[in-house]
Length: 143
Image (tube, rainbow, N blue to C red; front, side):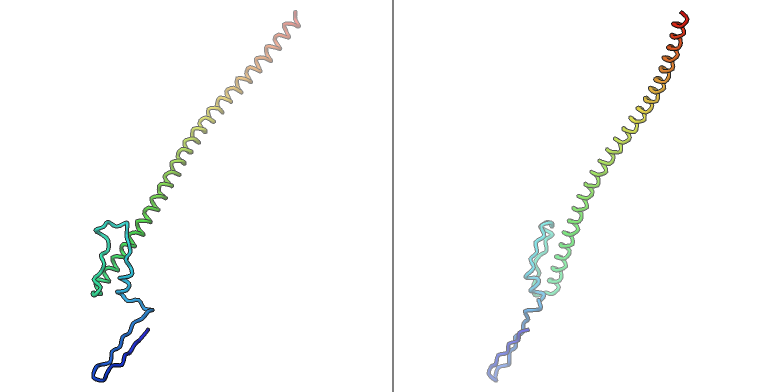
């Protein structure tokens, strides 16, 4: 705190002037802070306070605080919407993969069934061939 005292003639009262460079005053805060809130419509922007009224300065501060909170909430909403879009994209991809897996499982089931049928037919034909060879050998041996 800086204090200045000036001596004046005896017929005039002493004058003291004090001010501080360390402690910000409410009016100085209000004057120094002209925040801009681009997210707010023009009609919702904080109006500079009447500097002679503490209540006006307080209303201005509260309004600025609410505007900052609004900006923060709006930013959080934007981040959450981005995250939502990412999750929807992941979900869409997961659904696509699930459908592809189901298609491949069905294809595998059909191919497995076809393979069993082919193995059965192969076994039957192999047995028929063996029977025909035996029959053919008997004919050649009897002739």
